[in-house]
Length: 298
Image (cartoon, rainbow, N blue to C red; front, top):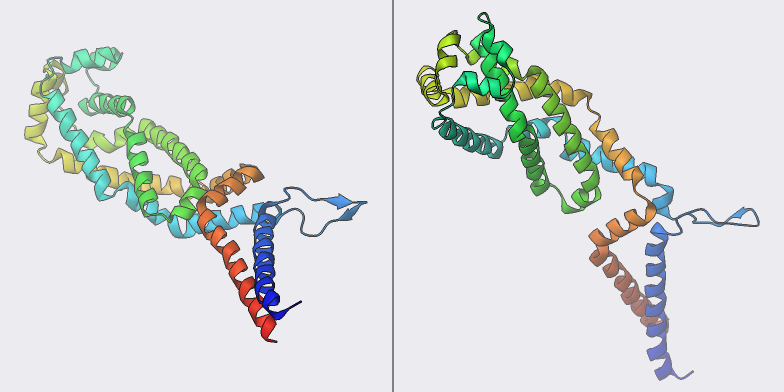
């Protein structure tokens, strides 16, 4: 073969080999999905690396997310972040403005929610009745869901896009689990958060229209917005912090990743890293071309 032809063919062949080997290596990360045996003999490199090590990969991803991204302190800080506080203050102002124009009395409002027995019990403390109403409003407005969705939105904005896409379904599952638990905690213990703010003028407030009662509350507790927020923060740090300690977020993420089938994992990783993986393939081709030229020199 003439030297001129070798100068052309050697780099081309080297580049082709580089492209094929790197492309094959990337494919072998994912495929085959299952172990292959021929005449009872295990074919090396089957299954692919990721299917073979899915459990370990899931464990590693879950550990990274819970140790460095979605750790205990980060979750608590996000639930009491400035964005959450702003959302709370907007909702508080909206509700106060609505209640200031409401002609219904507290008694009628309680009857609407089938709390007549509370109204008829003279010994019932005003704090118990009003807290029941506020908890009902929290459930109707889905405050817990909105707060946690906002918190997870903050997480997403600060997460590495690769880690977020890989753990997206797991994070969504965690979000729903947290919403259910917070709603349960609000329903079971929410009264304790607000009962201390209610005074003993039970009968008077029951007869007042909601609009007048709001004015009375505003006069007696002008800093109610901040007091409620501080109580919410205390609740998040103390009660919810204890719950979070018992919620195995790492295991939830790990289980969710293990639930993916191999095709889903491949598509997800390729969607995230397609550009980088393609660059590796072409880099293999470039190195093959270079090696082809070097081979001619020696």
